Image (cartoon, rainbow, N blue to C red; front, top):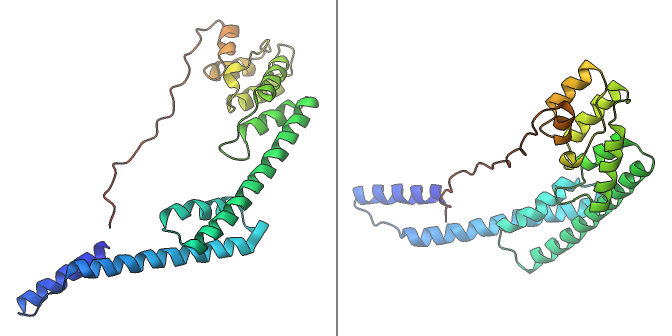
Length: 224
């Protein structure tokens, strides 16, 4: 639209200089806007049709992108039908991934596979998935029990590093630190993420890290 306005303004400027009639910019902008909306809708429908045709071959993030982009266009009845079908497919695929994830997490807890459990907690299938309170409590207990002074230092260090990358890190209460310089260094480094380590080290417990700040860019005027 800015390009259309600039072109109309230049054309009217030249017309005035040459003594010719100018054109109504409002009418031209209205026509251009209508064409832009129709084009955007057609492009979205093409993407939606492609996504529906691809079925499960389409990557989840691509399917989500098509569904999300529907908010940027004015949908007609046909497009709304396509969107509903895509939303049903997206929900079904996310539910399937969540079920698999929960089953793997349960298996890791039961088998006391600490590293697998922590890896799963750190990487849920999507941003909106949260570990249940029951599962989180069991993983915390498992990790806390594993992090004891008699543990192999290499394994202890690895588990601490994995724990520091999870949402349950501040609830974990290690039972001890191996008498190994590398383990002590790992404990000091991660004391901010796992406060109980600070207590075991005789350090002052660090405060929780500040919330991540999202830098928002100044709003720009949308072209109409």
